[in-house]
Image: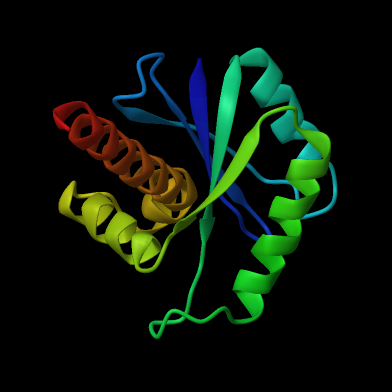
Amino acid sequence: MRTLGIDYGDKRTGLSISDPLGITAQPLPTIKAPAGKGLVERITEVVSEKDVCEVVVGLPRNMDGTLGGSGRKVMAFVERLREVLGCEVLVEDERLTTMMADKALAALGESPRVRKKKLDRVAAQLILQSHLDRKRTCEGSQQDS
């Protein structure tokens, strides 16, 4: 069973998928559908096609940890996914992931135009990888007890 990572956006939504063991995150193609116009339906298809058991959505927070307008939009999207999907839908703090994704792509020598095309899926990959790493760390510390 796999985990799907989502970097929700008004114009583009980045996706990533875990390997079956839940160790690594790989990017999937970005969904270019604006929010509300087939986005939930497309995600539902991916969940079914990829045998997803868990979905992790990046939650943008202000630097002080509070939710702003973008965070509230994401939470409404998460609630919609929870109503429609037959799997667990979690949120993951995504502060600075877009900036980290852009820096990583720039370090690879990608042009600004190419970075813009890849940014959402790389951000989704970072969100998912963070979740997978923390989950493995928690499971490992429980086994040590």
